[in-house]
Length: 161
Image (spheres, rainbow, N blue to C red):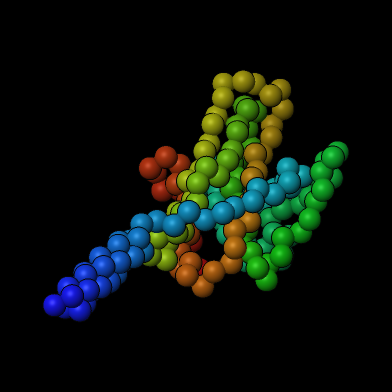
């Protein structure tokens, strides 16, 4: 009888464990990102059609096509390792107002990487035009099928990988 009770308890625990691991896979997984240095800028020959432009760079040539780099004092510039990483980029069209950009949170759920962006446009005049830019690296993964950039709940852009 004890063997029967222990067997029943074992199968119950196994069932509960499988059920909870299945539910865990249904939850979005937080993805670690690393913001790149502030020395990146949008090249002068690039014309943005959209007010906010988001992209995923899979190679150094993708970065070089859109961005230049200018050394910033105290900055330790390192090129991304594209064998291990993708680069997320967000650019806002040139304007004379202060704009703060950030990638707040990145999650992966069922092949879709959701990038939660912060675009904080302040009513402060710069006195000149600037093009706000932010870049960050995430680990390269075959699990990522699409990348969706959001400003609050508004979809900015979806990129198919």
